[in-house]
Length: 202
Image (cartoon, rainbow, N blue to C red; front, top):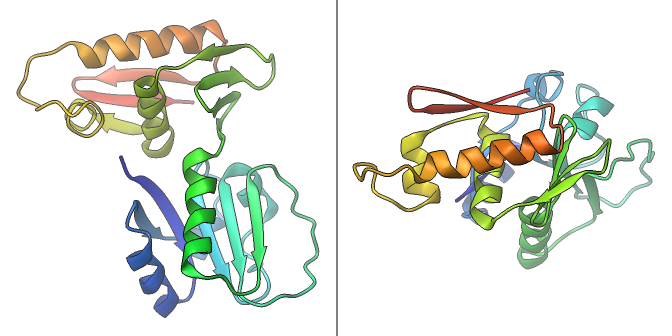
């Protein structure tokens, strides 16, 4: 499964990055989106020459998983402090760049409302209650975190690798177990469904 990655950078550089990051679905990030308080829980990459654009405020950094690459070394006013933000300065070779991106966005903690996914565990960040996830449960939750809604067909073909025309209740079984775990740790998010579409409500 490919993760979605929003990227803000200059146009020529965006195309180069898009060619490099073959393991991600790359989407251009506009300053309007970055400044919108509804833009949350996304993997984002900022490739900047010097300062962060004024349209990108502090809430953007606290609400998203962010990596910032500055092409020039300079003294940066470190007012943005969040566990989900990584800053890198100066020139970087392709291997180092890819390593940082993969480490950050594939292995990183995901947070939505009061729920955190880290390694094979889902936790309530307020109470500390947690439950173990199977690899498939984790993958389903991550996709829902990123997309907010997914079809039954997508889950079958992209996550479970089952042809859509095969009759199976596997999806329902996985989602039932995930719902139970969310309920047990008093999650503020819920998974609902309508026909063959599953939604993450928060």
